[in-house]
Length: 297
Image (cartoon, rainbow, N blue to C red; front, side):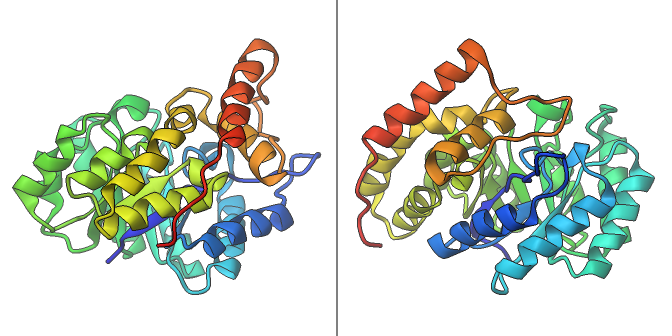
């Protein structure tokens, strides 16, 4: 059902902590113009847990305005399953094309609870679902066994594989074939995942560097591995910024330098400062100084 580059977009705020729809529309449009294949709103990078349900649906509406018919997924990452189900129902009513579902980011569900939660949200929304498996960030591992258990429900169509173990991608394919659309969700493992069979990339640094991200994906799809690898090697220091407690601040700072955007975040987060900011800015500026010319693809 889904394939390609799906940005996990950042949520933009005004100086007084309101949603900045104009800036989101501008930034989302740059990603669509670069050839991205869909948008995922209100995830970890989108500061979803800091947004109300109303705000999440407003961000979705903004993304839909610029998506030119490409799929828009709403992230469901609520602490309580009843709230997750309520958001899924509202997202479906608003016209979402699908859901990316995280088991409770607060309570670390066991295997039985994980399956029950995913099923409850899928039933409530009755939309195609991308399972978000991220055992490092959320301490819940949606294992291959659980994916197999959920496979009978056709609403589960895709997996965002973020276990940080590249072997997991092959294990999913070996066990389940093409039952799920397999997306990589770890920026600095994207080339590796695409090499072993992932058909999509839920990307973070794409929000600041959309053309480079799409180029890597398209070149890999065309079998032009060495050209993709050359760009990826340049990109790697930037992609490492996605794998951090401060991924939101890091990537928004990259958007400042690459797109002329801003790095406003919602508290308790604060923009990077001091030595940490200087280190991240050096990574960004060093990369921009040697930004490669992209081949035609």
